[in-house]
Amino acid sequence: MLIFELTADMDSLGLARRLTECGAASYVVSGDRPRVVCECGTALRSRVAQLVAGMITREWLQARVVERVCRMEPLWSAEEVQFHALVEICESRLKSRPVAGHTLDEWQASLARALMSHFGRSVCIALDPFVRFRLHRAVVELAQRVRDRLVASALEDEYEESLSMLRYMLDEQPLYEAELHVYITPDGVWITDAEGGMVSDEQIELVALQDDDVTSEDLAMTILITRSPWRIVVHDGYPDAPWPSFSETVTRVFGDRAIPCPGCPTCRPNRSRTGSRERFAFDHRSSRAVRRRLTPEAERTSDAPVDSELGEG
Image 1 (cartoon, rainbow, N blue to C red):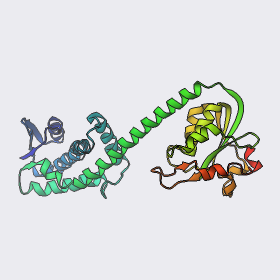
Image 2 (image 1 turned 135 degrees about the vertical axis):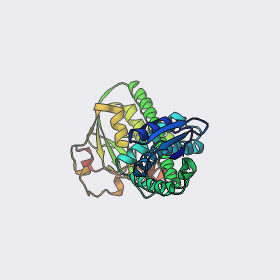
Image 3 (image 1 turned 90 degrees about the horizontal axis):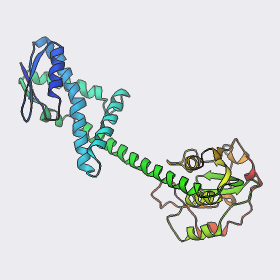
Image 4 (image 1 turned 90 degrees about the vertical axis):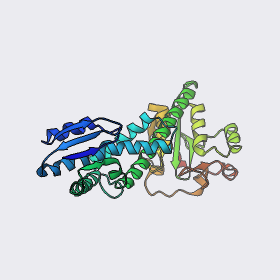
């Protein structure tokens, strides 16, 4: 006979049913800490250990991860934490993604071996203290991954709200029969007309210079919305930009009006870009991976000659 003491959030009836299905007659003794009593011979103990270890690396593990994340981040709802914890654990198992150095299948096999060893010393096993130390590192790492998922989800929601606001502002503007070209590089963003002439707005730039938080991307988006062209050609020279990239934002705000450059001299790989074509300066102080600000120095160079190739594409 083996007796497993479970926690209240573990499915004692489900475990008893699975043990019975494998040939080990089992029943549940209810209480604050329900117990599953399993009557089985020595030949079935290996299978019993595998079933119990499987429940631990699923139900118990998910419950402890949710518990830890909710303690770390009390402002998130338990339902949201549970959802992301379930997704993370399922993906880690299906993709054999290591957790604290081992896959979940390896953790499960290790627990099954430890249970088999324990069966020889005692017939009663309190699963929570038995497992809590052994899976501590896995719980900590999974909790951090779930927290990262929650942060990413919140950022995505905030981004979607920003897109909705930008689309609303765009809808308020009349459509102009103009074609503008947007050039995106790691050093900044600038806009030209179809002939390659630099497009700017003195009033917008004046306001931007008074706000340290305004980036060249913010300035370019403001100009694009106020100009509301019927066509925007996006020259993306920064395909590896951190999310959300300005190229993606332009495309999602303007929809079919924004098209990628089919291939012009400026967009060809490994083409050198000179300082005279860098309208906005780079600032390493920002919290973003790439933060580009409009600076007085950049403003003074705004009258620099523009390569005629900028209008191509």
